[in-house]
Structure formats: C-alpha cells, structure tokens
Length: 159
Image (tube, rainbow, N blue to C red; front, side, top):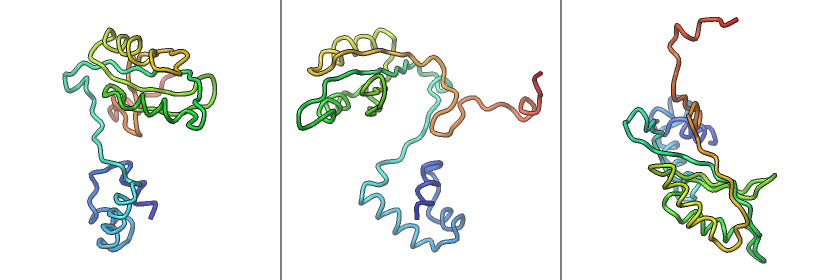
C-alpha cells in the first residue's frame, strides 16, 4: 500500500483509476486505501508546486537557522508550534547539528522577510539566535525540476 503513497507524493493528480492500473490493484481498494490514509492523517493535503517566477509573481524565500533553548517538559515543540503559526512560515523542521530549527518563509521582499525575522521570530522567548539565508534560485524541489533542459541540451557533452 505504500506504493500508493509514493506515487501520490510524486504526482497528487493521479486518479484512483490510474493508480490501480499502475499498481495492478482494484480501483475500489485504491480508493479505500486513500480514504483511510486521509482519515489517519497519513495524507495531510494535496498541493501544486508553482514556479512563481514564470507566473509573474515576485517572492523572496528564506531558510532561517534558529537556535533555541528547549523548554522543560516540551523540549522544542512549544517554540516550533509558536513559529509555525505565523502565516509567512511555510515549513519548520527540528534539526540536528549547529542549529535547532530550520524555518522556511516567503515574503514579497527582502525587507519584509528581514522585518519578520527581527520583529517576530527573534523576539520569541527561547530563541537564542537566527541566521537567515535567502534562496537565490530554485533548481529542484520535491523531485520537480524548475528549468528542464531541452532534449538537445541534454545530449551535449561538456569537456
């Protein structure tokens, strides 16, 4: 059944009929499995990956490293919960290594992102420090290429 999840993660537009044909399963069984995954919050939602540059919209995306002081009884969870409630925040991850949380946000300008970090994120109790990295260009995200090369370009050998 995890094959259903793998295919949906790669292309959430696949229908139950298409999945059934790909996996050699009964369509009703695929529909039932998907319904169960949704009920159990295994499937959390469906999204389109949009190249906003090609759509003519200007967005600035930043990856912010956040060092925090874990809270007694809650560890990092309470601070992460506080952070992910901001509308600008797209993703929050608990990390191992040099920092504790990785926060990904988008804004309309560098100034808007900087304002969020200085006025909202860094002022949260328990946040020790932040380090902001602006994404300059996206090449690949969630297995999707942003600028696919043409077939002719793929055949050229660079020496």
